[in-house]
Length: 255
Ligand code: ADP
Ligand code: MG
Image (cartoon, rainbow, N blue to C red; front, side, top):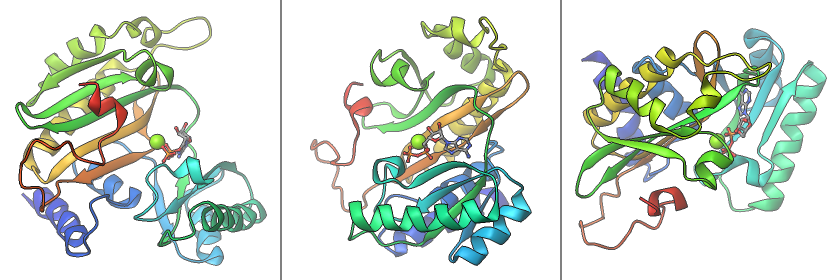
């Protein structure tokens, strides 16, 4: 119950500020409430804070822009990976601000999110979308070209049990990749299934969530970690007409 209240609190604050897109730190805090593993993160508002957060988290770190107006952070030079020293963090911090101010001058900048750098691995995506007809639905696929170009995904209407989640994982064509190949160890299917069921619980408990994207989740031989989380709230002014939501992305439209 406490979990639901905390999540509702984060959502209510965003709604009060007329923000439909939650900030990455807000989306990740919500994930944590539902035991969805995420990279450790701290919000910094100055270079000095970013350096002290990096020290706390431990190098190497990742820096990302935090802005209610920036949806695809890498598109505006808002993500820098693998920073190893305080000096690199200082430079990275400044570079991100310069990039964003140049490429999206009107973006309101809240700060910079410092996070642990998750080791590179096979990336998967878990998504949720509130379908007008079916309600909350869950999507699963592999990161990169598999979802974006090959549309190799599986879907379920919530609630999704862990057993069902496991079947969902085996349904994609790229499932073989998760079994491991050459030097790539197999991915922890159980950990991915757990993330799917927890995401299902999250979106069924919170109908205010219109779309959710855990993209990507790094998968390991043991465990998995969400490195980017995006949550879009329902438009309260949307009077349930048939007009498609402007914010819906390509993947959504193909459904
Ligand atoms: P975008 O808003 O552009 O989707 P992401 O946060 O997904 O930004 O970052 C872009 C890419 O950088 C990710 O797809 C992932 O490969 C990598 N990445 C992001 N955060 C981390 C992290 N904490 N550890 C390791 N890799 C990361
Ligand atoms: Mg992403």
